[in-house]
Length: 559
Image 1: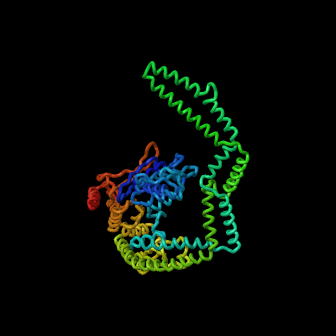
Image 2: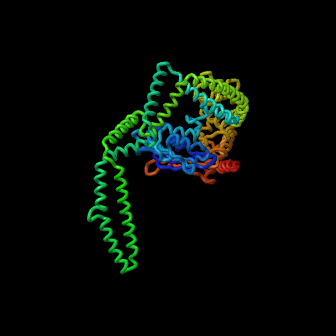
Image 3: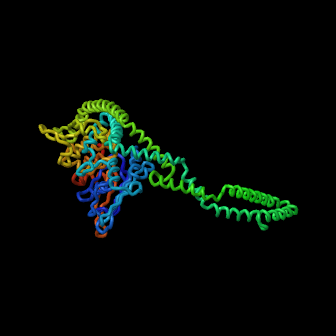
């Protein structure tokens, strides 16, 4: 759900934060008060096009921030990580969009800079806008098919088809890689044979590059190393002022000190430990010296192997491990190509089996969809009748995809294409939802569908604008009840001019304009029960006693 929306320097808004509630939220206010600013701000933060003319006069930039609780979308974190965005903490998703008068745009998801496409893809998972806006996922045939499958509990069958289709795509990709012309085939064989032979001849082991560099460094600096060892040995033991020689004199002095004062024994012990460490250092230096040899032939041998490694590194990888891995992969490709005919036959046999499974799975899925369609269409038509379309009907057209369309790797949903249709007038054929001209009709059709699908639909926030266009009387009451019904499953945000629609909400926000220091500001307030009565009375036409009683009755009927 959308928990908070902050708007800064957008149209008539200077700095405004709205904290929305679960369930059915309604927004009302006088015409021109700025109700559409909320919709515009939400569109912006969900990735829609930004118009710099929307920036408040006198400001350099506009910012919109939104906070969503995405606990109901378990796949959200995986989606975020797939887009290079930090996952949510505590199920809180933070979106931010800024744009300036110079036309620059910036967007952030959980504080991470993001592309506009990433923001929009996340917006599609979070919010459905219904009304004169384009953020309407239900108009897309692919989403309609998904809704039909969810309504009919066919998701498992659809996923099974998708899994088979994915396996087919992977096998076909393997086959394409094997089927090449003879010239290309021969060149690939020659290259792979050369690569594997060259890497095998090097007889590399993991870590060889590091060990080789260390050997070269020691061999190349052997003379200098021996000089330093000799200097260290002299300082330790071979000079009249050597540490070990003077250390003996120091020890005798400390022994005398201990005889006079037994508490100084710890000092003598420390001296003994230090002398033991110096003697061990002397032995280690001697051993280290034995392992160093000035050998020009050995240096040349190491240098030659190092040059060999650098040559392999330029072609196959930056480390010994990467070069070894490249060789293993090349060897596997070589074996596959050398057995090309047998491999192609294996793939063809597997593809024939998969095609049969796909055909059975797809036909079963299509048959199940045909059984579900009448039930869904009847349920939506019943909701439409409640919303004032007494003579209208809802239909679903299911058409088979062409053979070409069922076969591409992108097809994971079966052999069908679905189209939701609406017939507003008796005797006239139904038309696709996307062809409906009236935004009021569109919004109410969407409301009917959402009412039926509230349990199956995954989008957690629904925004309705102009659902009350050309509506009145009992239909207005029905619209309000439908909103409240959906609000028990999803969060709903509705902008309305009708009191019965507003009265059904569990949270009521009012937009108003006020003049401060010669400038106009839009404000949004959440109304208390008494304030709701006054606002509903205004929407009904006045503040008289009868009108206020009517407003109170509307509210009491919702409790």
